[in-house]
Amino acid sequence: MIQENLHEVEKIIEKCKTGCSRIQQNDVKLVAVTKNHDIYAMREAIDAGVTAIGENRIQEAIEKNATLERNVEWHLIGHLQTNKVKQAVKIFDLIHSVDSEKLAVELDKAAEKIHKVQDVLVQVNLAREESKFGIYRENLPDLLAKIDNLGNLRLCGFMCIAPNYEKVEDCRPLFHEMYEIFQEAKEIAFKTANIKYLSMGMTHDYRIAIEEGANIVRVGTAIFGQRQY
Image 1 (tube, rainbow, N blue to C red):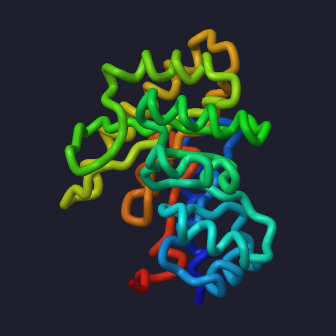
Image 2: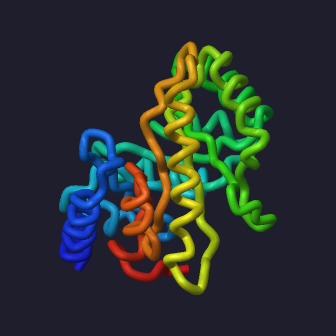
């Protein structure tokens, strides 16, 4: 079932890419969200073609990383507390959820200790939802400048989560605005940043996200089914 679901998601991604001129190099990275799915489901997905997995919780990722026995990219897509950064930099290839200067500084320190340059995305809370993490747009320039001056972080782009609108089409203006921010950042003369990723869209709204320029989508339920809590 996982293999069939994955191939259906891949077909939808290809269809959405075809109609979107915004996607650079005609590429969209699929991050399979494996939160609360067991190691066997993860292996099945990877063996079926998944190359990147997304985890929300550090402890769950540590346990899975120790037993997965597969070569795959690890993406942290959930909120990261500063007391977990040492563990995070040891596991994750890309951290999507940097949302403060304090967190950036702690990540930089932890990465330096293991001689790593950690790739990160800045999470932006465009809808200003109090229930979600992410920096507000007006505070974004200061955070980008800060990250660009930290020697062991590499800014690679942005992540956002749309509100759970009753009508999914209502996500479109927010995704459109996020794409504009992404494009504007590409024009900034950063010292070390490599702005290449725009992570937005989940199972219910990834089609619209791709149409509006996302080149990373985070899909779990459409691949694995409902999570087992």
